[in-house]
Image (cartoon, rainbow, N blue to C red; front, side, top):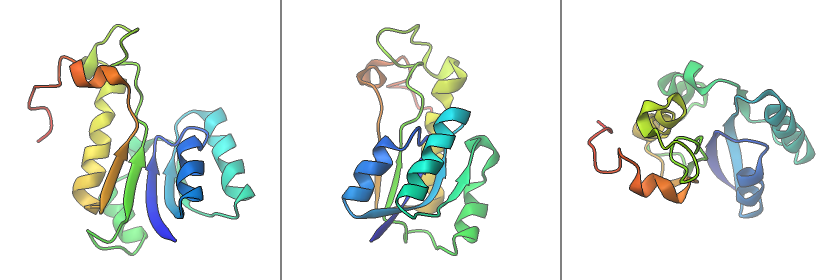
Length: 139
């Protein structure tokens, strides 16, 4: 099995697909209380015991790398679906002026630390035309 980290896991929909494709989660995070409970049930159903966290803002990727006894470049996949409301074509499209939009940068932060072999970000079409799309917001 290949190993991955799941950020903004929701109820585990992306995780289910990845698991069926031969991936096992090392770490999952989800802020919403009800989604987190469903994600825990999904893990139990598949006899998976990843480290889990609620608020990704409280997780230091360097500390997680150490806790997982990994080195940069060893992780197979970093996957996640950061909140899309800030970029959605049917929303206010505040982009990085919305606290939820800034969470997209957490994926970048984790990718810089873990240097995974691949990154999978599930996001809405509006991200490509967001006000920040051409800005140099990612250091």
